[in-house]
Amino acid sequence: MKNNGTEKAAESCNSKNRFTCIFDEKEITARIGAVAAQINADYAGKNLVAVCVLKGAFMFFSDLVKQLVMEPELDFVRVSSYCGQTESSRAVTITKDLEVNVQGKHVLLVEDIVDTGHTIAFLTNHLQARGACDVRVAALVDKTERREVPVKAAYVALNLPEGFIVGYGLDYKEKYRELPGIYLVDLDA
Ligand code: IMP
Ligand code: MG
Image 1 (tube, protein in one colour):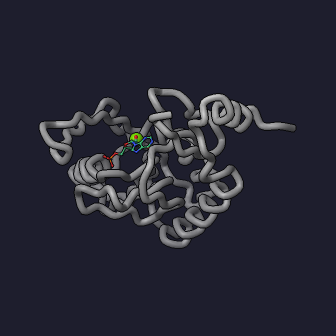
Image 2: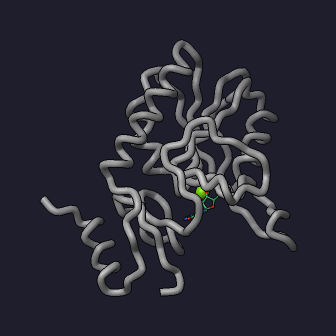
Image 3: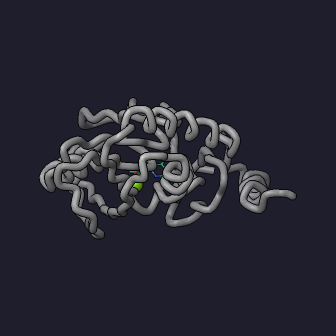
């Protein structure tokens, strides 16, 4: 059976020449399997709270947690970020906070993309202030070359030096999140 999402992106690609598939479903699945195995090994016998950073990480979170064996508690946060005067003065605010008590627990923040690093730096501080004993980040995509604050994701499924991507949860103006693969978008096309 043909995949509607892939077809749709391919259609956009043909008509507008905007989308290039850079990670297909098969590669994403394989990389998430490897990340899940690492997480299972590192958190064996520990209390883990896995926190999905909405909205972009929803698909990654769903595929990742299905493979976790330590029976993690699951929770969701949502943030919005506003650019200040300069690129690096980014203000991040919480629009949907945690509901699970993370006091004394290990927390795994599951993020779609770590880009400048502001979001993850903010959320890590927030979780530590709530008493988490350890906070690590699992990122679907790491854009290391764009870092403005020195944060590191402990678990990374895919690396991307530069470019704007959509699909597999990632959006451009709230569209294309449903696509099963990840596509590089030529925003000027
Ligand atoms: P930062 O690390 O604080 O800069 O924030 C990263 C956030 O910016 C991610 O969680 C995404 O929501 C968004 N973002 C960064 N790069 C992209 C992209 O290429 N496509 C879609 N969203 C992106
Ligand atoms: Mg995000």
